[in-house]
Every structure is written in C-alpha cells, then in structure tokens.
Image (cartoon, rainbow, N blue to C red; front, side, top):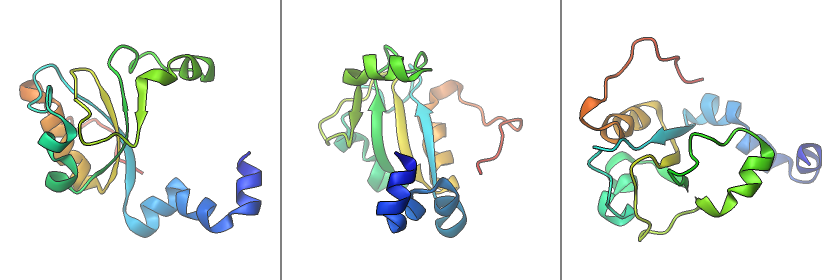
Amino acid sequence: RKMAMAALRPTLDRFLSMDTLRERYGVYMEEIHLADDSELVGLSLQEAAISKRFGLTIIAIIGKDHAKNISSVEEKDQDAENVTFNPRSHSKLQAGDALIVLGTEVELTRLEKIAGGNNHEVQDSKPQRG
C-alpha cells in the first residue's frame, strides 16, 4: 500500500513522511497520555482549548481502556471503536487517554507538562524527538 501511495500520490507521500515533517517544518507527531490529576481530565476539547492554547493539532484520541495495550495490528483492528480520529470539540478527555497530536517540540513539551498533572517531571533521560 505504501508503494502504491508513493506512485499515485508522490506529493502527499513526501509531505506525510515523518522526516519531511521534522526537517522541513519542525513538526512532530507524538502520543501524550493524560494523568489522573491532569487539569484537562473531564474537559471537552473545546473547554481544554488545546489547539488554541498550545498550537497543536489533535489527530486522534485513544481511549484509556486500551491505550497502553495496543501492540499489534490485530489488537488495533479489534479496538478500533475506542479510537476517535479527528475528534470533535465535544469529545471529553479522560484520565489515561492517549492524545495523538501534531506540533512543534516546544508546543508538545508544554502540553506534556499539563497532561502529566501535578506529578509530572520533565526527565533529562527522555530521548529527544527526531
């Protein structure tokens, strides 16, 4: 399928390449988990104003019931009903949800601090994006 996309839609294929997003635009796709005590828990996307406050684009929300357990294609297909792509403004954020977001390193780091709640610590050992 990847080869077909590259042949039929080369511009889209180049644009969607993570290398292109990082190198040309300084944009990363990241998975950010909501801690139980995050100020975002219980808010709708509209109330949380993630796009407005952080300049991020939310690609999907993966529900807390399986966010940590998805590891194979079969599991992803099985749990597809718990993934909300292009979530609407009324979508509620829950503790343990994984947000799939697109943004710059600075924007992502800001959201990670809020999503991590009161116990969030920025770890020096965390690998750098890219």
